Image (tube, rainbow, N blue to C red; front, side, top):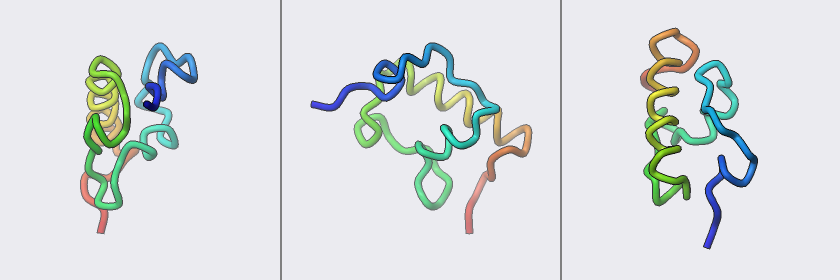
Length: 66
């Protein structure tokens, strides 16, 4: 069984400005991947979703990829 990415790399806070990290958890259509697909804890998944929403609002990530 895989371990949580954030626990494994000792990341306590998911920052919305770290776009390269956030892109790992998006599918090719720029949608957030599910918890089962990413193997992330529920708490980290919520932080991840919030960070992606903030990055989209600040125009660091696209809302939709074509």
